[in-house]
Length: 506
Image: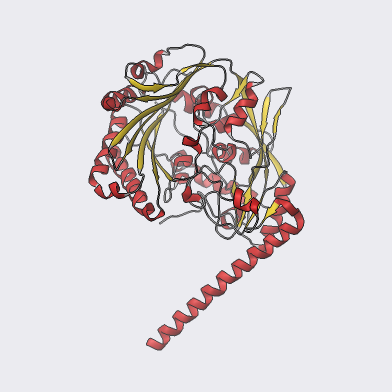
């Protein structure tokens, strides 16, 4: 029996070794074919282009080692390269801005990395003022460009974030109470399907695919252009404010009050994003907010509860564009790539009890895990992001989306963020995040405050946002649409990173 077990072990080892070798040969062969077809658009690990561009993911947790780097310039480049990879069964990843910190979401070990940074379409249609955006753009570039027309788009709140992943995840924005998710303002997607065809998805062409892309992430194809509705913007108030840390209770109370009808969030021109941060090793707190209010009012009533709290600094003022508003986030502090990052998320019903529950649970778990103090550079953040009834109704009125959240009184998307230095601490930080989300969910369910939704752009490893879309009703429709446009599931099997329709982390 011992000899039999030994033989099985040897066989298993040999099979694994052969499989790994075969995968490596496959990737090398595919990279070679792409090099032959595309020349300088394909970079190998020894090249200076690869060394410079391949590590451009925002979080160190997303730094992997692709077998080669492909930088397409056109949709046809994407289609031709995809045809090679599908034919050979070669795994790949697709990266726009690379802001998602989930390992493998926008990078890959050993496969081919599509880096879309050279796809930089910026074009305004004269007839209906639709902004056509390439997937290689970041929001600061988009806002600076649209401002020349006296227009804006409903995009990211942080300047360095890339266009594609953000829009394919829905997109929390400044003006959702007017326009819904950012994806609800997309009028057309140009994308490459698994069979390498280049198609449009809009209300008339492939309308089912159009719906699925408004939150379906990377499960349907590679989007090569986003056509986005614009709106006039000449003045906007807002900025980044840091409050005095001894006023934590006042800050949390202000956030709690803001979340209810009459507390500020029901102003359709308003957006307020309050965050509590703690440097775990020192216990030092940072209370900060990121706000916006459409128009020229220098003292919006919607923010009155926050305006009473003493500050350390404030950039709040009336500005002329979203480029100006987001300029404070177009800095190294928001775009540096030297730290490890993680997001985890859950949903809560709006109201003071929910905001306070999440905040209390956050600090209690930190106290229960003193080992966190040994994690070098660890900063933890909790942020209640308010989506109003008007926001969710605007999303439905635009034609809907896979998230399909019942408007009711809105929802709080509670974000837990982490930043730290060393890979050796990854599992401890993930353990804290998972325990915190589980504790918030348990308590909120017990108090009738739970809202079944996970915002995919804030989701962490192990979370399964698609299962909660439409309160669990969207996933079957999403899979049927996937089966129509990708019947062989290439975007599940060959593009394994990120959040997949068939994914199970258990």
